[in-house]
Length: 552
Image 1: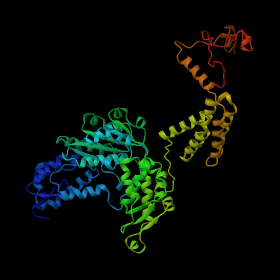
Image 2: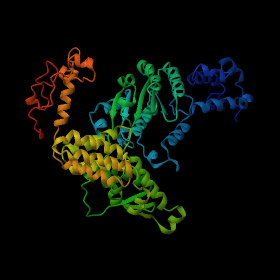
Image 3: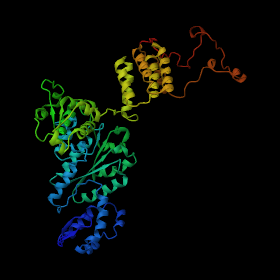
Image 4: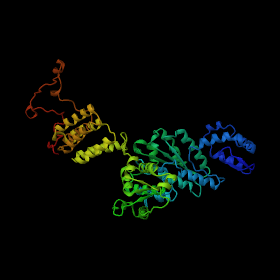
């Protein structure tokens, strides 16, 4: 070690002895997490630090610096230290970009600017509110809600690079995951953010999988989001209306991201092929109807990819139909698509020695299919997809669309839904939407439910398909459903106590009740012949069925 340099006990970096005192005081103040944790560092006062800042004492301070560094390195924050040199910054940026071989391809392909972001034009297109705010460097509190692999973390990564490249150094970015961090870690980040706020530096906190925090844990963000100490960006795959604290939700704007289209996935995959050192072979006579959906802004890049010619550095060749199949199969999830491509390339692409002998590898559709066996299906049996899909099945049966009904049933079965749950809903449909128009439908649905309980999956799938098709084809009548709702409305809206049962309809098992004229005058004749009224007094003219038309 150079005798003119001194090791900082907080950040473990070397500085000139003439500036070490001012640096240490500033470094200690900025990175102090909580008051309670200061007891772990008994000699953390500026006076004791100055007494130890000598070249001979550098080794003794290594142990303290390692402890402090390990507690802070878990947060990827952007700090402002004027003493850091440029080469170190460049190396750190490369690490964050994930250029290492062990970094997944999906991580390597994350965009660093809005220009490279693919998809979600409804929120990031021209003249949209979010895009204009980000271009001005204004980052609002927001919740990114969308399915897996649609770009939530990628958008947060774009914001992270905006903070890193901020010339005024007014922004810093902290990334956390609710799957790994707890409330205590969040409190430490907020405490450090409070210190940075005194130096006019604002902290952006990205909380991935924020729905994993329960609603009480989410309260830790509330006062600090409201006071402006931090700006919160949350990412979730669950419906925020159900999974997030309503108070927190009212302070954040919900940004809805959609599944990526096939055109979006094609563009992402073609960029990935280039980054991996491959080329795409396009057939001259192949229709480009799918590619035309990419958009005018991507036309140049599309032509560049399709018309690539093999070079001496080409590691593999893949044809365009294979790329299209991969884009169509991954259910709008870019992470699945890139993972399948990466696995196929790792299996087939030659290493440096083999490349000199055999040349570039040929990756076929069978190779991709082997690397991406479609066992995934976006279906959460406890989440919003569960209710959306059963709703689609019910409404398709009600509309007598047998094809749509069978499709949604198959989606639920493929997603692992409980067959007994589906059968129970079919029983409901048989009465609610068919009812007296075909009384046999209810019996068929009940028998289907019993059959599912007895034989289970996978054998009971055809029972569900048969029952669903029968209900879809059956004549429809909502007479029973409408009549029941009308009766419930009369009872719910009745003012005062509910009217009593007429005396002639009351049960009279004892002599006392008979003396009180319970059941007096009752006969077993039809209502038109008995001369009795079977409704309470004042409600004699109620008619829940209207014209009694089963086709109504």
